[in-house]
Length: 273
Image (cartoon, rainbow, N blue to C red):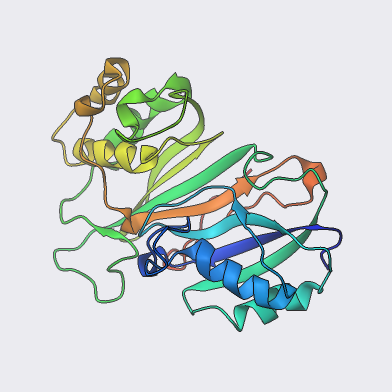
């Protein structure tokens, strides 16, 4: 499949621990995913490009299914937009797929939902291989209690208690369509899908669910947090290391397949649909 037309969409994977987040910063000294991609794509396009992504991830947050688009008057072909661009990128970023996009496609505003997983591993000692890519939890987590607490967050609700103090969204309402917690070998995975997310929303939810998992709080505490509509009522913000953007879904006519891509450290991930 080769990209056609002026708007080109990409599926991107990156290790967020190498960057100061997705969004390009005012200071060029801060490495960002957007910055290095725009530089590489611009060389292949032979012109400056601006990328628009589905979800602007924070520093330390990873992605296996980030979707972004850019405009270019010339179609360089699929190989150029993948292999060519990848040859100019640092090892921590890779373009995996390219899709033809209609003129009205927008990676951010056309999206129907975003899906994240938060990965926790149980160990008394830090892992030399997992540090920066999963969050270590020495306590034996009560996954059943975490799942019970998570059920309070399903539906279209006011997530004021789970948004960052600096969040600039006009509305605190988001619709959480899936929120599950399950154990996979030495990992505990929080799997969440919503129409959109507030700043730090997933990490704030994860931090509160971790308190439930450690038996520091009862599962119904999650409902109390939600009703408080106050960020100070919730638990601490969980570290970014374990967070992955794994899928973005779009209307079928957009031509971007709705499937989830597991973080490399997991053997499997439930289907996106």
